[in-house]
Length: 93
Image (cartoon, rainbow, N blue to C red; front, top):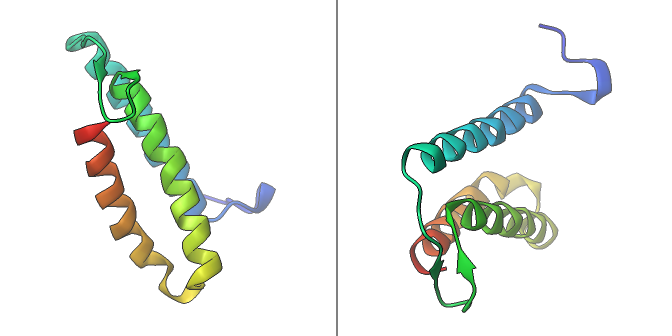
């Protein structure tokens, strides 16, 4: 498959496929297992979808900060930080 248009690379395609997969998964979860919003440490009501959005947004900032402070050589280690952040958001937010 040729991904040369619009500067697509395999990592970029995988990134968007993972995001699409997450959105599909969370949509199915919302349909099969409806949830009531809960209030966490931010003192706002959040659902699974809200927490996913907060996680994705925060992970983007973590990766940008990591890239600026540490550099691209160790960028895959930012994934570990993002996973810990995601676990914290889904547990306490």
